[in-house]
Image (cartoon, rainbow over all chains, first blue to last red; front, top):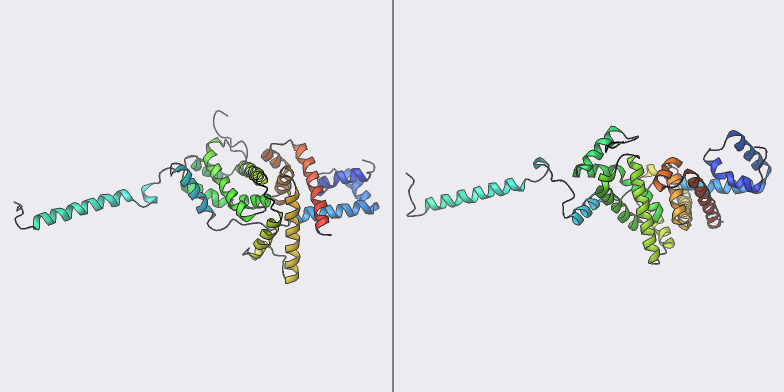
Length: 122
Length: 203
């Protein structure tokens, strides 16, 4: 590549910034930028703008984000989207209900046996 | 491929995670969200410029990921697939907001300022020291976000993927579905527009 004019120079800014130009092309652009004050200012302006985008601070998801997503999924799928969790990973309500039923039954039997006139066990 | 996922360029951990996600494992889902939440949130925030919209849309992205995980075949990186979903959600939200005449530039600036003042860990902006530097940083951040907000959605997504997320042209091409040459030429146009906007704002 011999020389670049103003229009060609502007067309090469992005590739130059991304270091995608061949050495010869980059050299020709650099030469033009050294010689042309207008294009040099344009490139400096380009460099400042694109560089500033890269300097934006990283945004962080707010706390409770994960819970918010889980809630949305549960609400929309009515709990069907997630596979049932294993017994050890959650509150075992089935076991609790069985224990409670057993307890109620035991209390009932004890009360029946301790009532006056209740049948005596052999 | 015989129906099997290719899982190109993915670590063993990612592959295991995806398999667990496909089995609808809730713990895997939480792990995935924790792993990618900040990436997705940052992309969405920069696209939409509003904290409120960003939180809602970023959450929708993960809902979609979880719903559509069976369609992920591993032909691209998981993060590429995730970014594609995020970019599509952003475009849809921008269209929706546009229809509702939601011109957010002023709000964007306020939100950007608020968020800069909020509890960002100092490690995330190590170059900002004294009050003057903070003001200068705020001013620049506001100008850049406003400049980005001036770009149309097709250009905005390219600037964010390339200059904010630092992705390769190939990845951007895969995310947007555009030819490599189109990505390069559109990105160039977008950067020139951004330069002009910022030159006006910083004048």
